[in-house]
Length: 559
Image 1 (cartoon, rainbow, N blue to C red):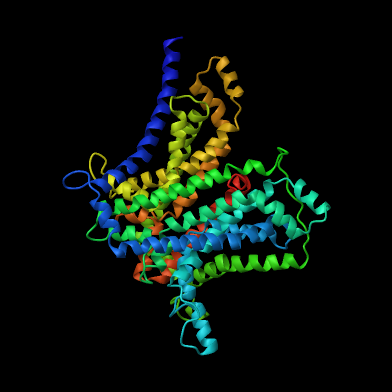
Image 2 (cartoon, rainbow, N blue to C red; image 1 turned 90 degrees about the vertical axis):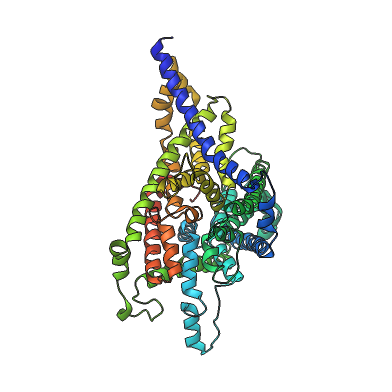
């Protein structure tokens, strides 16, 4: 082997080793920092931080609130999402395409914007629905009060239902229709077929969706911060945020965060185990889709349920935000005299934090998506082809951030990057590290699928012609992996645009992002500006999704 060939081989190995080392640093660093900080004391290791975190009754209340919220959201999401999924996959319900598109819109809508919209709609004093109710009935008490546990459960359920719908539709479409058709031929009615065959077969997917909805409710920060804090109660994520208020109690926050991470990891482990059992559902080895059935009046009942959901999740919230964004004063009547475009001019050209936040958000999202797609492409290829020792461990490590709630990750990053040698706090780079770490698993999953879609024989052919492993990856595998790379990029870029749970603890005046500015404006009560910025964020998100939907919709699980 020539010296030049050895150098080329070593370059490829070095690239994969550096990618693996960077992954270890991104994931292991915050976890180790959390554990050590939670056990640290003036005289060495101690459990005093855990006592300070969990002994006071005021700190234990948020734990119960979190589990009440999570269990309620999980149950309601399945109760609402499963019939919607059934209507989309198993009936000839009218407007199925429109309902599916609106469910996707609900899926990409940030939960904190949904919360903000429902505050505009159902705030006890100036909420649009309550004002209309008082005008019609003359009553003094509000019809609904969004600032309550019930209001929080309602808002978070709206954002969690698409998780159930997407997973249940996928499970229903993956079933071959043979067994259901055989049961119908034997005389079983639609309800009997569903109860005895279809639902048992997709039970793992349903339970998995329930656990993901529970996890979503458990780790959310934005919606609870906007609804629970004004209602004078905390959940675990808002209590973690409270530990960072002056004077900050970082070590206590670390102790409080670890059990939340353990619960999240446990839920994900159970969910993965359940979905790993889906193979028992069919034995034909082929995918098939049942023919949508015309169920007469039931189709219209399903349509009514679907329209009720999309009205509450999309039409009313989007309408409320747009009305507030176009109003001189949102609490007044929405008449031509109260219409204005000045709010858009204000947030885009006059309000300095917004302009810098938009630039920061777009740059951070694009850079994070690019870095995440490339890094995970290297990791997925190294793991899939077993190129380095411990490739399987690296693959597992890349999935660990799924079990770390964003605000818990932020606590670990705050501990690591507020001191030398990597004092990144106060810069946008700490947000880059947070985003890259948080979204590493989704990018890795997309690239892993892309690697398995490239047959190794193609690379071996290149190597028999004298190419190195690195050259085979660069010239053969990587071009074939482009759809997976694009999917990974989008799967990081879209959620990074609206990330709040990790940014809220790590931002400073020079590193604000759009989601943080929205929350700050909300705290200041500047509703018109908040709504305008929310409308712009939603419009950007939906425009990007629409532009890439034809290419990546199926890979994203949204079609």
